[in-house]
Image (cartoon, rainbow, N blue to C red; front, side, top):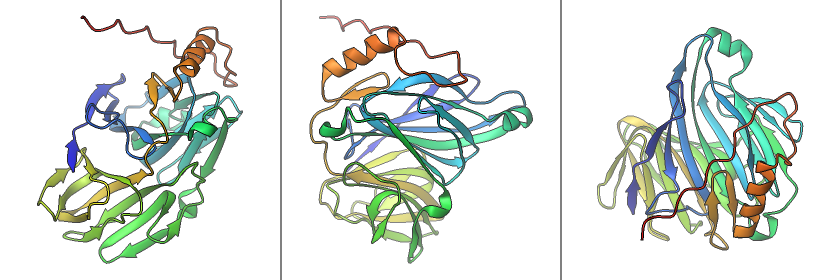
Length: 295
């Protein structure tokens, strides 16, 4: 078991993200190859999130909010808000473009925003599938209680629950609230597992290791794991699944088992031949290539 401290980054206007995956010591947990915590941030009136249209290939994005609202638009013609507890699952496949912005009514009044975004690598045979999008309201997600633990299954299957969010490979994504001092034993049915602490403090019974909010715990495959909340309780997101079916290359917003597909996506975005997002005229330009490290 090891702990990852995310790297902070300011996306502008005081909006902070903390990137837990990929990390130097952990490139993925199951098919999850990316994890950002967004915020919490307070936008003043007239301000908000403005992620301009940008492309993805080879992955599914999973947006899950704790506070606030984001208006999602994509090149399939989707226009849908996401609110706390809802799930936006966007399958990029061979290519999709989307934007993420604060809705106009919240921009006018000011608002808070806080949540997580994951990238799930698609199985090799599905990397070039047609793009798609699905939205699931919070009320559609199954829930259960285990002692002092309240579990909501966001995606996949765990603890006898199955989410309506269709995942392309065996995985689980759980939003867990732990009462003060409550325990939760992790299932071992998935080869790779991790816990991102959102609020409070979580201890592991085996070594007494303590993990505070904003940290990622990655557990050893097959090892028994018992989590215990601190005196103020805790909220954490548990996730994982089967190991990747092949190594993945990540460059900017592109994920693939083949470098050639990433090179093709770069060329298509530079030439602006991806399908556009209706109603959007701006876009995020292709970033420059990083120079190779010195010999």
